[in-house]
Image 1 (tube, one colour):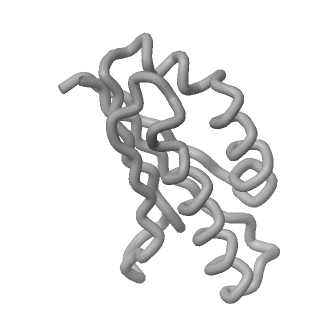
Image 2 (tube, one colour):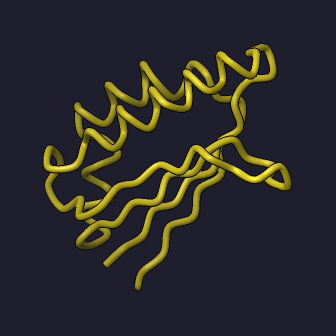
Length: 100
């Protein structure tokens, strides 16, 4: 199994209310990919962060293997969510991929 974890910071230009809406839309979009992408076994987005956090949200996803993760990165359903719900609103992204 391969884990794919992402931390994002949203752009500073958004109000707190706008950020809550954006985070919920990212969560809904990404979690909606479950069952649509081969090899994706679990996907969760954490949007409730403690004040000590320096990220706004986190993706925690699991894949059958590294090939499945590579397929996810270019899958049209993932690209559609990333291009419409994530990339336009984020200023930074940190990624950690590892095998279990």
